Amino acid sequence: MPHTFVIFGASGDLTSRKLVPALYNLMRAGLLPEETKIVGFSRTKMSDGEWRASLRESTKQHAGGEPFSQEAWNTFEPIIHYQPGDIESTADFEKLQQRLCSLEEGNPTPRVYYLATAPRFYTPAIAALGNLNMASEDHGDRRIVIEKPFGTDLVTAQALNNYIHTVFKESQVYRIDHYLGKESVQNILALRFANTIFEPIWNRRYIDHVQITVAEEVPVGRRGSYYDSAGVLRDMFQNHLLQLLMVTAMEAPVRFNADAVRNEKVKVLDAIRPLTLEQVADASIRGQYSGYLEEPGVRPGSNTATFGAVRLEVDNWRWQGVPFYLRSGKAMSCRTTQIVIGFRQPPLELFACDNSQAQREANRLVIQIQPAEGIQLHFHTKVPGDGMRLRLTDLEFSYSREFSGRLPEAYEPLLLDCMTGDASLFARSDEVEKSWGIIDPFVRAWSSDTTPPIPNYQPGDWGPAASNAWMHEQGQSWFDLCPVLR
Ligand code: BG6
Image (tube, rainbow, N blue to C red; front, side, top):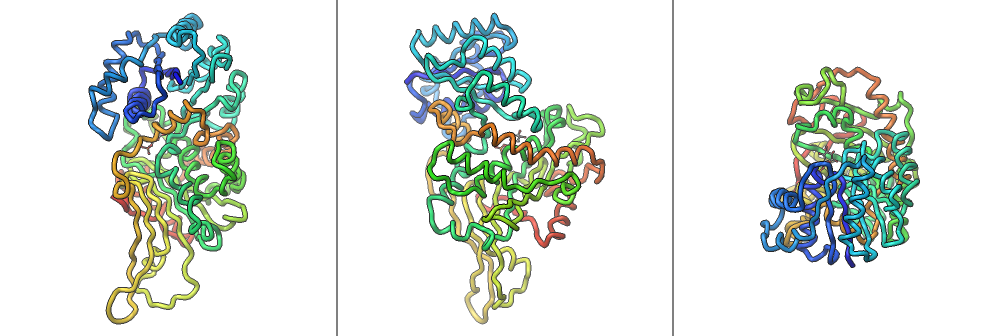
């Protein structure tokens, strides 16, 4: 079935670094629906040929995995088209519509409109699609994909949802969070719901706490002006970290479809205990790396947090009393994304253990999302020989050892899903709004508080020292190992 994939913001970084390489990889894997056409729309004046030439270079650089194949590119290139135009110009939009109709040769063709633009263009683009009747499904499905940031708080997210719904039905809207496209995130669903052995212990009776860390080694770099108004809460917590929490904590859906999965995820958000501004201080730590203020685009004296740690409580039968610690930062010790399930200690210490830290470090399941993907179970074993000496050891599953070939980049399954109409891995309107409802109090409390003085951690640290002290006060410690799997 032919598809038309229309990219708004075609000359931007997202298109060249992520979207087109993902579409190219899908085609190479034989997964791109036959006769798909890719149409780019943005203000830069370019011909089809010029856009294709620049995409060839960027795809070579960013497609990852297998070496670039000129032969594959030769097959891919002819499906790429470019239409210059301004999102805010009705005349340019009309030209785009004519171009699409002529490429589709009058045949009913499903279309995906992908908003890869700056967020301020979301509403003009949606308005124009509505005015020109381009959202109507008389000639095939029409879907719209919206990138993050989806609003900057609950009020703006609600306003954006309301606006979208004046033109598109909710079933046509795909709010993308690339974390849900990562193989190892989807594998959490398989681990939990395709096996029976984890379910009986996946609850407050056996789990002491959960840690979710998304650490990045890179500093803010070129994105200073965007980042300085977003900060780590809006950039990472409202979307990626809460998504990881939802897939870790959700109940099994009754079936694997978009509504059933998203209903269960939303129930987790509903169960998160609301916090007052005063409680937020006790439930969070923020930081800024030294050198952030010198990054281009950052306001002098900016108070923006580049590191955050928050404690959330999920008040339902499964999780009541089990704290979820979420942590993320830029310029940290290493790049690692991991979910650590800390199980309770045995009720009796039968065997002397030299080290109480080692005692706590056993009984832990580490789900590593990146850079290498896999799972490790940490437990005690007896050291051979005299006496009952214990040592920490592990069982390990590693994607790269288990499966040959390259793992698809996160955007690949997601782009395919929006073409085939599977919204399971996309956020629904209520999900996005409830996420903002959870993060907003932290944003408000942090922006109104000028203590502690920041910057407060050095690039290469695991965030500020206060973050460790905060965990120790609660009888916990962060799991600070750089990638446990390689
Ligand atoms: C993006 C954030 O959504 O996710 C970036 O805006 C961050 O600041 C990125 O670097 C992290 O994604 P990944 O896939 O590299 O972990």
